[in-house]
Length: 373
Ligand SMILES: Cc1cc2nc3c(=O)[nH]c(=O)nc-3n(C[C@H](O)[C@H](O)[C@H](O)COP(=O)(O)OP(=O)(O)OC[C@H]3O[C@@H](n4cnc5c(N)ncnc54)[C@H](O)[C@@H]3O)c2cc1C
Image 1 (cartoon, rainbow, N blue to C red):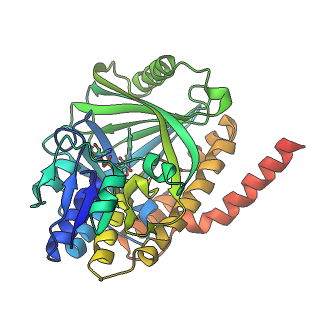
Image 2: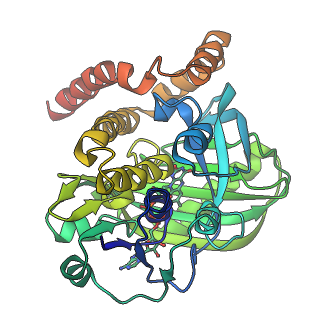
Image 3: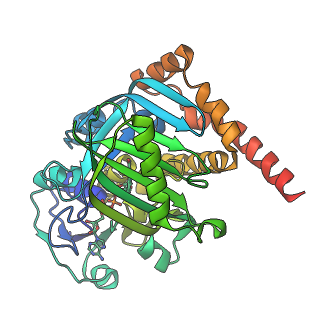
């Protein structure tokens, strides 16, 4: 059986590992010259957003034989709004490195792959489709799925980030929601060592935001972060992404093509998390090819999760700074911490995103209705 994997990233490499374990050697095509050949950044996985999985890293190791070593366990997340600061404490998730770094997740995955990776590939999807029994499309964005007419794009986002040097606690990332600084967007700091972190901003490309200067926006977020964390960070490496697509495919599989990772739509529009679901789609595509599972069935919860996350984004966008302040202030509660702790320490159990979706939808409809009046 001839299987082509287009893209040696999170989903493509996870697919390869799973195929190999089941006796199939895929041919991997990567258009860059090495795995993770891009800027280095820190990312996170939060189990509250990936229910019913309690511990994604443990799950991947025990059930999928995919071993990933994170930077650290997140034990505290500080959320800053315009006038308030709130903390969520407990074992919330993990942080990790991505990109051109020997410990990045894609580098770790590549070390577990035995099949050959064809670098600097110029083969296009149409060629692979014609010459292979199956193609796993894992190129890391919705472009190909869109071109095939199999993608609903809900928004695009402008992202600018940098590596900053300072003093950080690797168990403790920060997020900012201040719509005077970043309209309908957010900023975050995720440390990847005690001396280095990423400061990133992301805001949607809505008409009102198109006039914004991304450098000015990033500088504002940088000033805010320096003020709140009482440090003056040294900037080392910068990166920028324009029109980063957030959307989802209509069909997870068409003929001999599997849509995996961001080609599927694994990036959650709420907070932009997509790593875990990307790995899952790679694993699930391999299961289908090996007749262990049915891709369309296995990916159903990911469609659902995407839709809940989109409602969450619309909810966040609908809030004023004053309303955001109230929510953030209420985060500092022992009851919430023990709820989060309970959620993160039990299998199955409560899916906070899912159960709060009807309420957020009601609120969103109310806000839209009053806006249109
Ligand atoms: C700045 C930023 C911060 C993020 N933070 C988080 C976070 O904190 N937590 C989280 O869970 N998610 C986060 N995400 C999202 C997460 O990184 C993605 O959802 C995930 O990497 C998608 O995996 P993938 O396999 O689809 O794509 P990738 O891992 O990007 O892999 C795609 C691969 O395909 C290759 N490729 C592209 N085109 C071709 C082609 N034509 N032929 C061959 N190969 C090709 C690329 O070079 C790349 O190697 C973030 C994303 C960004 C941009």
